Image (cartoon, rainbow, N blue to C red; front, top):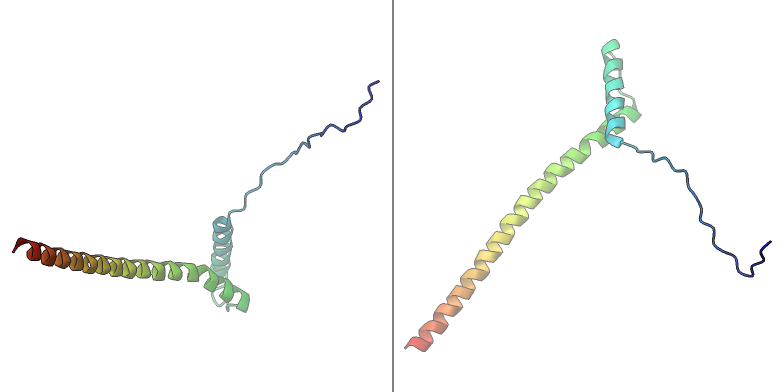
Length: 102
């Protein structure tokens, strides 16, 4: 029998099985069920929850298109600013060169 004054740390062992949640797959399954249900009942009215979920599904794609427009606009703005600064630098160098050549 061994006596120790200090506790040795014991390492915890985990039995963790990873679980993944695929939001796109869940959304696709929900929409597929909705379309199957819609095919069976053509005169179905949208409930408020279905309408909100449909909006939530469509808004990110609209947001992406807005972001791509903003990206193009900012790229144009950057290029214009770059060419303006470059033109000012060329003019300054031209006048400095003209002053020292005469």
